[in-house]
Length: 301
Image (cartoon, rainbow, N blue to C red; front, side, top):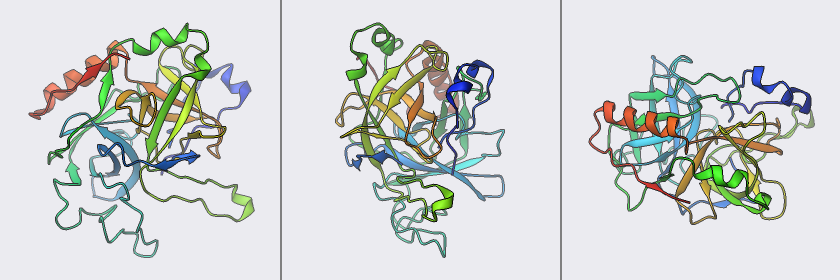
């Protein structure tokens, strides 16, 4: 699993010089996400087909899956991927066999699911992920070998959509929704309690904290999920969508990137997908990938 970044308040003052570590389930007051069937559990493998890590991603078309750049990390050894779109994709995971016998996670697509609720990929792309704040370039794409046909897909916010929120009064009241398959309870190592991951798609509400601090600078969306009725992200949620609005929203404004607290109880950061550079890269990469499903949808917020 991917680890969330640890930053102290002191480090935040010099964050422009720091290299971020990859971030990662939804923590806090979460609910099952049966609203976004196009959000999938993504498993990445090396050249030998060995499991590397898991992330979350969102279909923008039947074959174009949006995730984080540090997930589709070619330099880190990622070569292929498999995506499971079941809400309970890894719920039956057996730690002894290290396989979910129902879905096949993380080793195969269960019989009858290939091209239905499971797909493979050998086309991974990232936006030249740097890991250096604030502009980490933490966006990636996975082009599926088998199209997954659904009644709806994720919709990208138009370029500059979030900019207006940076200057509005009362921005702390603005709501976002996070979705993913990562850890739900992360405990201190010394307390003897294990981390808990249901490996199912969960979602929670979060509120906007900042868009233009030194750590954000127009590239990252900073949210917090503490408080009644709210939740945050953790290891394995990396690449998952951040929706503008409540649970019913399909409008993606960012992908989960990193966090400040090792126990996933603090502030979360997501890399914005509503910038002109990111949108141009996505469209150019999809056009060059050879997939016939290039009709990515955009909307204003």
